[in-house]
Length: 138
Image (cartoon, rainbow, N blue to C red; front, side, top):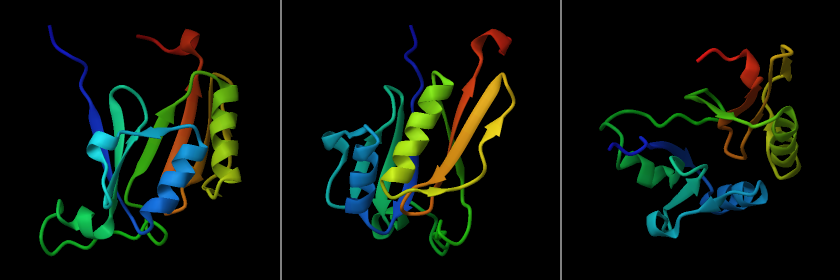
């Protein structure tokens, strides 16, 4: 029997303490087993994690000679999280904006699909999206 595949998104941060405080204010936790002074393992779900790393630690994992993108100046990735309802989309994005996040784009409302976005304090772009389960074909 196979186990669920996991994903670890690695993101560079300038201020690890501010990032931890931001995500904790949104109701998320960190796995202390994979966290230290240079890395914080953000637990998004049982199978999804964001490894928030100081830029120095992040460079240990990148190819030599490649620049680390400053997310406040350039987009390196768009991270999209699903939400169980339209209300949860609003709750999460409102909490992000109230705790040091910034708007990223205007809300998107297509009736069967609703999404909002924010930038975390480091400038990483996060999307939060709900889709009506009755409209999704499996």
